Picture (cartoon, rainbow, N blue to C red):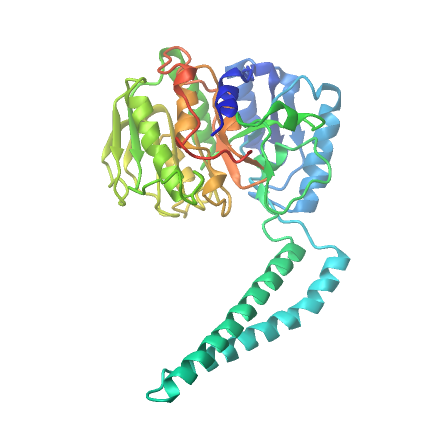
Length: 446
């Protein structure tokens, strides 16, 4: 990490999110969407004309065509005269959660049609070559050297076939527009961007490590969040809990569930793999326990916290129990909790799922975050950065997420009141305590 980038973290201006800068999106086809929006506007003092009602599907999924025509198009038109006066888009209960993938063009479909037989032939060639390699068992006596040389040649042929097949597979994935789906909220970060690449992600220019020169000539990037969950009653409780917790400051314990994975700054991880994120959880625990003077419980073993083992939980971060929620935390009102795993926000409303986001909200958490599909580890904020900023009391929930998530147009979604600032009245850290994490990692923007 360069000294310049570390310094940039401290001199970057606060986003200073205010209630009048939040645009509230409701689905006119879901009555509860508007009812909850009205409750939120009254609670936060947001102007009534900051609500934009859209004609959207009732489901959690929206097709890419409908996203463009029914969401982005009308939203741009509604905000055209005030694009510079707002900073945050808030999706209310009823607004779709996930936007589908982009479709191949006619030319791409034609190329795919040509490549598919080649790919099939490649699989057959690999299968045949593998059989030939397996058949060449080491011989005895005079044939040993000849057999060994021949097997090495055949293995080389097999490796070349596999490399060719992998190149072909990458090309076909590109032509199919694989991984062009995204969380609606993450896509909306780029509301004013035109014709950007939808495959995979775009770097989030609100991230604290982005240099000013990288933003020149680029449209603004929005802060986004959603007030959504298993039921309207849960969403209303989330709104009320956020305001109540702000009055006294969030009280309770911090639970960090790391896995004991070591991070080597000189290795290949760069800080964005398993080791880097596990180290960031340990750094989170040290930061909040040390200068933060909070009651922190750190588990640094592979197993997750067992059921009912985390009383008075105010903050939680852990991993990795994929799509298998464990009811370990008894949340205090206002708790912020998220679990790092691949599918934890695939649905926020379905009653039969064990995804962490939906269940944590149902069990009393006030805010969470997670991915709507495979995000890769790097799709999450670094725990020490996100929770560290939150504990300073200087930034709202949406600002903390916007400053620490690396990608836009990707899989992550923040669920909670974007204006929530649980430590505003009782700051636990100073901003200079919060460093880029993990120590020794490399910035994704270098």
